[in-house]
Image 1 (cartoon, rainbow, N blue to C red):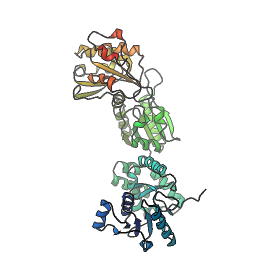
Image 2 (image 1 turned 90 degrees about the horizontal axis):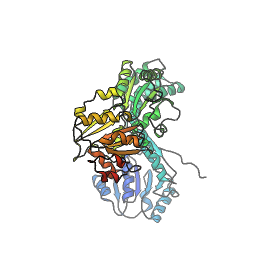
Image 3 (image 1 turned 180 degrees about the vertical axis):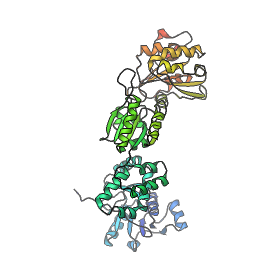
Image 4 (image 1 turned 90 degrees about the vertical axis):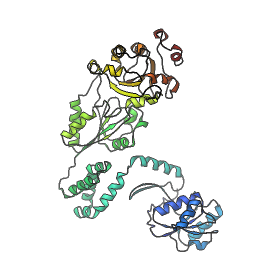
Length: 484
């Protein structure tokens, strides 16, 4: 096995670097060198239009012609970026004779240094190298890191750089300084920077430096987990889940989503269920408070979006009243995901100019709805509800004038591998749901757009339809039977 490469970050500001080659690859290398403040000296018979423009602007020096060893006089580094193997080897040999580090693009054997894949957040840089053996692996890892590190890390590095002397003076002993940084990074300063509150973050850092207390306050982040497909998590949701010490998650948060969270985080199910065990909202509040006051980073992980029938507002009001710092990461709510994964556009120029999100999980909530408004035509209803109230829902809508032939789609386990879509018309809503044994979690989409599930479905099996015996005379039976 060959020896490992020695990782090195080079300061090339104001220093000449020779690039041999004038094509597209050379252009990319020159652009990176300019970004680092280097002085690129390009040698090639011809240049790309962009390189030629940089030469005209004086940003690079161009030496026309074919490579000769004297091109390497007075430079600090060498990059060979031609498509001619003999020229690249000549460059590498001439560099070795002068004890210059050289990179030959796509040739690890000829290279004495590698250009890594780079993740950059201000002054913070993370370089990934495969030693030239598998550049695509390095690029793949870079893409993963790009999703985990947001721009606030650059702001954090800049802030700590400004306060570096004071931090070293306050904590001259390495162990104490390390503990300070561990508490700082687990505390409020990174959160404030993520929220673009730079001045408040600097004030908090100053306070931490002046304080003799070692404990730090915990935080709570309300995170929308989406409807179940882990691919629908946002980047901010992934970051929060991987920083969490404690995760309080709903019953409906999928196993695939939970698998994306930090492995050693404490996980507590706090779900609610009409049939089985439920955690009272007051108990959820108490758990958030307990763990936050113990200095832990708490993620309150909710199915869908915290602010769409997720009681997120109540939880924030509780945290605010108890002086617990919080932030919110939105999630893709069930209406959006279930509709998209069923091929149903919630709005459509020809069918629906409005959308209403409704919850109707019990008789009390049904009694509070504005049925006259819900019965209006040319709108889509997305109803978050258990399946028990479907019969009452149908009767009240029809009583207020909604057509019995209005199409519906019931989406069970939307976006998951077990998704089912059941379709029919308002007239047979309850009977069709019973026939197909629709179970929670299920979302009802009612409106003309629901009929498009038959032609636009793309995820999972084709929609199931009402049994033929249930079709009233005014239903377009052939249209429904095509999806049966």
